[in-house]
Picture 1: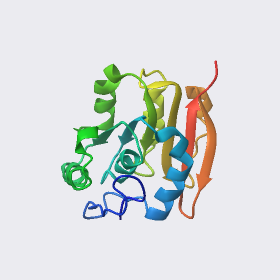
Picture 2: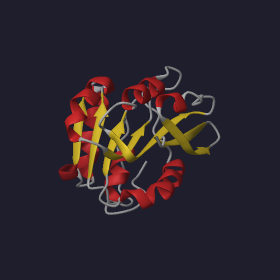
Picture 3: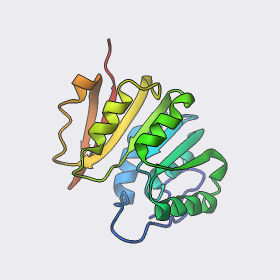
Amino acid sequence: MRVIAGSARSLSLKTVAGTDTRPTTDRIKETVFNILMPYLCDCSFLDLFAGSGAIGIEALSRGAAECFFVESSRNAAACISHNLAHTHLSDRGRLILADVFDALAGLEAHGAFDLIFMDPPYGHEYEKRVLQRLSSSPLVGADTLIVVEASLGTDFSYAGSLGFTVIREKKYKTNKHVFLKKSDC
């Protein structure tokens, strides 16, 4: 796995050993970042369930002003720290070793993020629980783009009842990216 583009282009990234994380493949990462490019310049990026940190590091490499990495696994957090140092992006990355829900509560003073990315473990409905939490959170503003990586079978029909609109869905062989924004009132 490597950084695809930007200031840290072509640098390899360490991944978490074992099967507890599913690193996003370079091909899928390139596809999603081609979609996100118009939003990245000087943005505030939140990477939930960050794993190796590859998504947030890609955002920083491509011009995000800051990225908060939220990860509950000590092994994964150590991997993120290593990858930030290796890519020379530590000065713009902040690692939060905590449960996602505790971290969201602690981040509320930050205000709205421009981009929120989450890649939770499949089959546990974490994406639904996070979206429920974000529906009334100051972390989400009118222009915040939320991207969820999920299995192909994950249902997002509830998004409207939480005040979100699915604005795009990009499907791959085994998973998809769902792009959401706050619904117009």
